[in-house]
Length: 199
Length: 201
Image 1 (cartoon, helix red, strand yellow):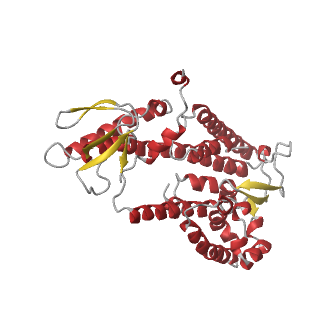
Image 2 (cartoon, rainbow over the protein chains, first blue to last red):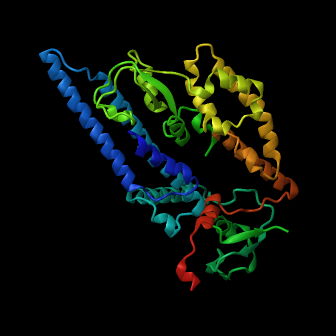
Image 3 (cartoon, rainbow over the protein chains, first blue to last red):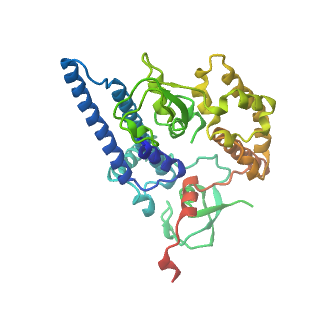
């Protein structure tokens, strides 16, 4: 059945909400082939219908061509939606994971997508640097209004050394607790390195 | 994943693409040469006039609404008189998920096939009577999977949103300090991570 592989592309995205499945080169190739095939057939039939009408009687191909055209448009829509929704997901990832993606997500990107990601990332960084007077504003932190300057956090992974903005070094070990300035750890909490502890 | 997606005619919406994949009964009004592939049960090369097929809505729609329609389509079974009567009697007792994954959204597409606008009325009636129960249900802390399975896809999104914000409100009322959370995608990514075999040994 026509349009089937295009739809399974979209279904694949639907099943994997919130993550990026591997870029499906194979299915995309199939859909592209189907589109090209349909266009070629349409051109051939159109040509033939012209010839036939010059001679006189002939089959009426209008219905066939219209049906094929509808299928082509559907396939195009699925392809575009697939790429567009992947980009949306990638954009959210920039805000949630930060500028460096985990390696197992990186392998799922196509070449064009990783290019887009680094471009978007640098554009966002340039913009954040340009706001305000000194050094810019980091828009990805302070998503909730702060209540206290220092917060207690528990480290969830062996992170290694971490340099605070005043230059002092902290060694972050798994399941240790730390009392740190809120602004310093907010990024690490969002990335899942720390867990915020409220008594 | 915002709700408004499917309500604007959004070309890129995943939901809308899946809704239009649903099949509706249609009948060919003209001969269509060379496209026998559309009819999986026949081996002929052409589709004859009068062939009845269940076509996906995305194909049936552009072919039937034009100056020279190629096919005629009719209302799917679940929007017909018999089912409308059931929904009218007590919409809350119906398992909408069984009637169709996208009951409301497909209904919005096919309502123009019913000149007496009864489909429109029944969609509204169904939603109104089920909405109260849906809201009650979203307020519960524990979700009952049996009840959840009876919702159609649209109701499910509504339910998830309502349940999530209810939980947020609850935690905010309990301790006024908002806990800083890891980003949702990060949490999900951690859950999905496969165990590296090398780490085990």
